[in-house]
Length: 153
Ligand SMILES: [Zn+2]
Image (tube, rainbow, N blue to C red; front, side, top):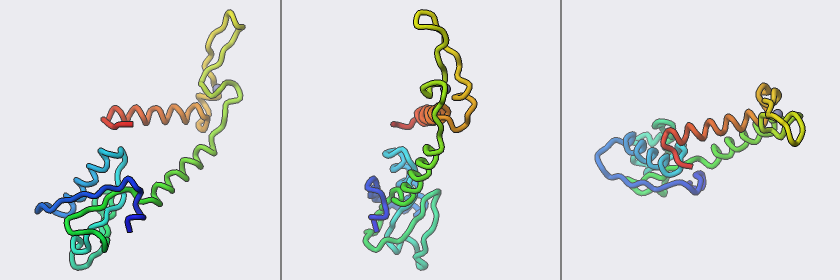
């Protein structure tokens, strides 16, 4: 069961009177705080899902019954296969990127000679959507946004 989760999964305990939804949301917030990414899957004691025992969605988390989970415990984390899909997507994306023929993927090149030169903005880097340069800009913007929102690296 728990081998479906990445090793970053955490065990959350809550025996309060709160609803299952609230508990899962709290566990999810804790996971997100710790790992910077939202969890996707949570295992609970079968009784926690009521008579039907059916899996359900809480936020973006699928809550499933796990026979090995104790009452009031929550195994929450990211599904190993979901992580793999995301990596595959990133690999595909990176494989589709092109290097700049005019500069070392830095968005500018030097014009002139060694003693007298100036920086010229590289058109290829800036105007080619799948250039390495634009990809890097995007990633940096994402990281800056992550930090601006209080995230950690
Ligand atoms: Zn360039």
